[in-house]
Image (cartoon, rainbow, N blue to C red; front, side, top):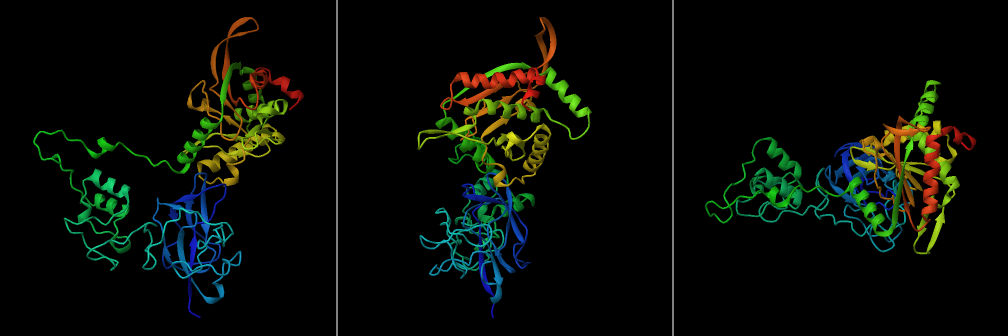
Length: 465
């Protein structure tokens, strides 16, 4: 039986994610793959994920160059499989009557009842309506962007083209490619593209720049008038940074938090000298090292047990405050991709040693970009240690849809009145930002004072910890 071509689409990665960016391909055209073999690494707004292939066979095409962003349900690659392995591995394929896709395989995006993509095989939810169309004319070469449009004019449809006519349009659709060429003084009309039917890709422009074929920008003004001021494209447009990935997700969540939550902030300075001394004794006793963050987290969970109003969220549709039974504690981590907030599940059941281990594990995964979606969602309260940046205080934005966040400044020696005398003590500023809908200032102040008192006198916490 002749091999059949199967199409693999970007799966629904859960938690409301609508797309992902291609980080790197793990296979190339012509490679033999087996069922569930990772074929591409993608980055969502929450983490990096390796997408497995639900078929075994030979890769015939890969879609989307590295750095491009694809919507859920978009084609990733096609695989030639034999007749015995032509069915999806999990889920028995799309429902009967589903229209064939561009490569001849069943298209899970056709029809209102079509099946949406899941991590392996196909699910039942309809794919995103934002899916871009696939260009007719057969599979594209590896690295071709999903929204590639065949170049018009001479050479179109041949799959290869020489430099465009000097007066003709450049075969490029990406505004990023155009801007990069403009800033480098490169004439796109003199460049042969390596994309589908001669489409000029970003890699083509970068290669031309590296080879030194870019010319200096023309210093003459467009009007040709002598002495007219010259303004570069960068000066005109500024530097544009795509608001996507982690930064885009953070921006959307923070903006929503400010729109929906009537927040208020209170703060207090606390003498952390005794807490730091207690931590030193714990660590000198051997065993896993206890971090200051773990100690503060344990005090937070104890405080939330006494003031459960803050471990809540507001159901605006039902006009109800939902007080949550478990504390899933988020904590901010700065990474190369931006700030992320991993979540320690059931933090109220953990002691300081267990919290320290979980903080270390999640921090390492966050900095490697390996957090799973379940590890960055479902938080009920956030602990934000901005003291690591050398600052004392802040008014943090609540991590929507939570109701409160405790901020911790740096712990530094300061003059302090201790036992009636002026002394140098280790002082920290604690700030609580809370949703004023879930409680009044008395509850917020009571929680903050509870935590601060136990920072100053950690021995008093032994009764309940």
